[in-house]
Image (cartoon, rainbow, N blue to C red):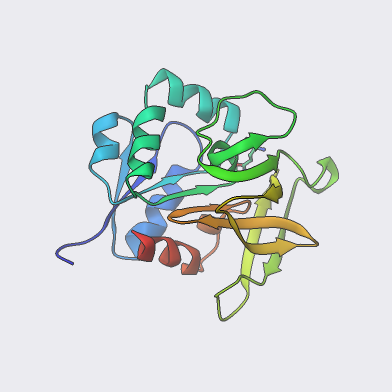
Length: 190
Ligand SMILES: NC(=O)CC[C@H](N)C(=O)O
């Protein structure tokens, strides 16, 4: 392939700068995405963690949802972390909040309980040769998948990583560790 891969990070709200930093370390061009034209210019898109109702509302306000859906349907890889995972889900249990609804999964928000707002845990991930540390911050988990969605990792029986074709979602924040392996996996999809 000619040139570097150009990966966009949705930069409406949340932890986009941290993803850009990881992408730079992987030798990618990492651009902030805020417009329809930005979406059209990238080889893949990351939807970061943050607050999923806010990100959803801003996707509507900035008129980006249909463009992302269309690009994803045409094969653009999309990776959602934490709030990004919520936004990618078809079903958000107990919530009518806006979502892109691209992945066949039902997510539960803030699902690990108030007393464990954040924690770290080693994960076994399907297809990965070694364990990866997951950083969970008021994290969701996936209660069920169907259709084309495949579970890649679980923690105590709760689904925390899902892939569906070129769509990827993690309940945890791989941009907050020094391990680049999850982003590397996504960049290979792009
Ligand atoms: N770290 C995160 O992205 C938290 C997600 C947040 N709890 C939400 O529901 O939007």
